[in-house]
Image (cartoon, rainbow, N blue to C red; front, top):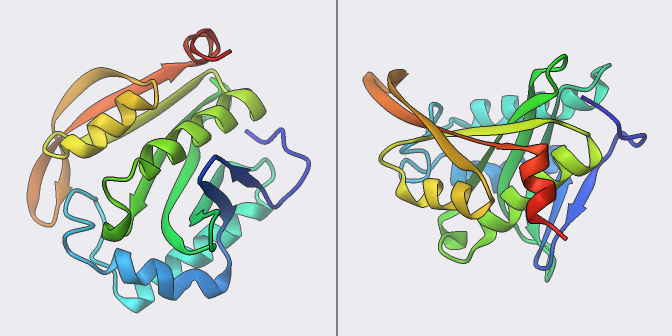
Length: 189
């Protein structure tokens, strides 16, 4: 998946800086990752401190992959640098040049368009920098806000998977979204 020459990747948007996680980010991540409302639609969490520290360790370890198969970014505000969430991109198939994206934000950051801005930056990085052909994402069908984010990021709903995820003892349905490189290139100047 890697076409980057640098091991540390930073993406910037109008309002955000997406930088790779650092060890000292764990407490800011834990603040939202331990919140039951934040992880309500996630297949993980709410996190214990140990869970959050393990996530940071996995995020740091991604940098040493050869070839690199994933990126986890701390989403910070350009103005002030406060960490407001996280997002990532992970290879599904190197041969097919496909990956999936995901994101999670602190509740204080909800409703400001940050998730859409971050998702667009991930898609641009995946297609424009990494040269991927297909970028996909899933969301719980009850998570209307996440579905809107994916649609605003240019993705199209491709499917509805019934009871495809067992989350905290309950079977959940998911929507599958995706975007192809020529669709993204055709939608951007």
